[in-house]
Image (cartoon, rainbow, N blue to C red; front, side, top):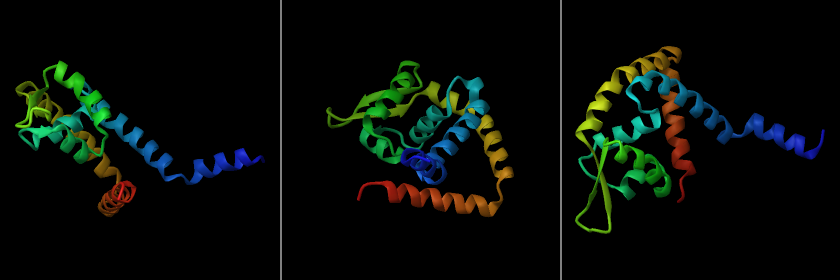
Length: 149
């Protein structure tokens, strides 16, 4: 076995990033299927949920909360603004872009909740309560550990 083959096997078997991304993709597909009839994806659902928790949030703060870089967040917000689910506003400081959930966005989010609840119930049924607690702790710890100091 070559060095490259050994390295590839090591990454495939041990890389936490790879395992997190595989889990993330599987979960994303599961939740996407559950809310598909609303016309949004789970990634968009997450953005709408974050905006539902704050009446008007600056882009930088939203990026921080969602653990996203501003460029990626802007790219993900653009279709939501275009579709009228999210409104863009100027903050007191005109250089700051802020976003809010529109009335249409609230309606779509309400329509998505039953599908989300169904997907969530499926996952909670598949995992034990102890698994969920451990997973929550592990994921929160991983996010903190991976963020810059």
